[in-house]
Length: 348
Image 1 (tube, rainbow, N blue to C red):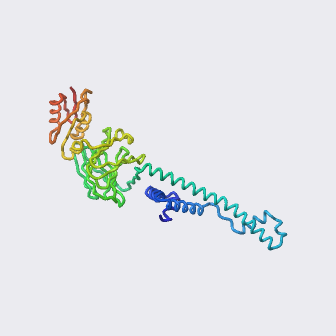
Image 2: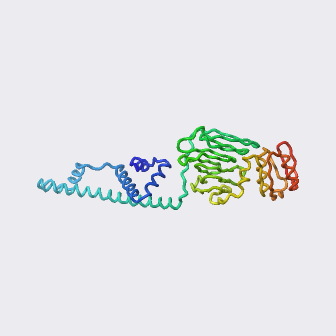
Image 3: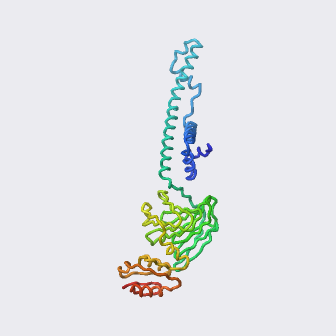
């Protein structure tokens, strides 16, 4: 690795990307570790705040400490002075030598510790920062939309969703922000990773992938369903990451990353039916149905009888109106309703 990059690291001016690059290189082999330590020791000694004493300083010090040297013959006096200078130089050099050795040992220990940390936590990711001005795409309740991103990737937005994206991605990363639900079809590029940031403190990293992400603020969970490609779900706080394979899903309850549930995608059709204009329920709990219907039809639904929340519904709707859906619920589950504008009241 270039000495200039290492010096930037030693000066504490390295960004996250360079820090990771240096640590990865320094822990890749014993030879790299030794070079890292040697460069660090050299840099430390070169940047010591005290200036070294010159020969005249040594001589003045020797003369001050041993005045009788002036009475000795010239040759003997010179030998004595030189001997004293060497002793003084040794006194100064020994602490520097110990400091150098101590620094070397300490750095070796730090690198070993970082190596073990990286080996034990291989899931650690470095998240990039968004610095560009963002465009905002808003889909109101009862509406769906589609967005074409600057790189040609496609995003379908479900009702009551918001997507923020720069007008142009930078050369290192592609970063968007989602609040709501969206289906992503990302252009593949292993050298140009794509990130979706969410308000739940979780980010999604992909290179070329089709997946559905639901992260509504009024849902108790975040859910990712992966159809093709590969992705990582990253906790922004701890930088821990969970990798998903095709046809897998991850559910994050109450923003507790340590309790994330990962497994085979069991309800893919239900998860992405909205993209095809379908409102699909498969033994779905009534509280989830209420939230989906509110977003689908732009309505506000209240449940007067808590027993209704114990119901589970299996049904498929395509072009039915809100009243038609409520009528079907009434016939199949004996749930009655009352409509006042865009407000709906459910009761038994």
